[in-house]
Length: 254
Image 1: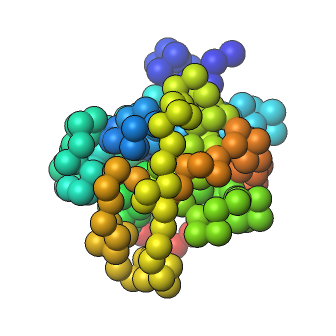
Image 2 (image 1 turned 180 degrees about the vertical axis):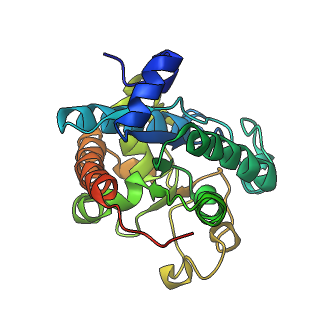
């Protein structure tokens, strides 16, 4: 039986509400990722991660529904200099995702997981979390494959500086997910990370290093094996978080 929300009838969805099903909303975007990766890279990762989490939840006996991936979002102006960045204003996006989540809450769902698969969306999803909590007393969750698979990535990666945009991590993911879309002949290390990484987080990433190619990292280290290892770890850890989240029932009173 399909775990896609959109494949269900209204009565089937009502049954999922009764079963306290987890609803997963993958959130990616469409933007340039250098010359070697497709512009839907983040959306591909979000869709794949959502599918694998859906499969793993079913295998673990967790009732689950997976929404179709949000494939358009907010990108910083620096990457919009290149083609391939249909942009959504950050406040519009926040309202859009917030409306979807609130609609799910109004249907009766209490366990909603947003998948954060694009760096610029962290603040968006966390604002939605807090807004929905204050308005409905329903506490949602965000999961990121890069964070859930981060320990494995840091252990196996070859680039000593890591990846921010279009480098070893994302290229490895795409080599695993859709290798036919990766143009390996167009790899370049021109925009390998060369900053003091202590500034990452306290300072907006794209303000730290000029990019000549639209990248912020080095894809030449990427392998499909690394992508698979990181995704496998992200799914394994993600299901554990989802199980804990679904089973946890105590919360603040409205």
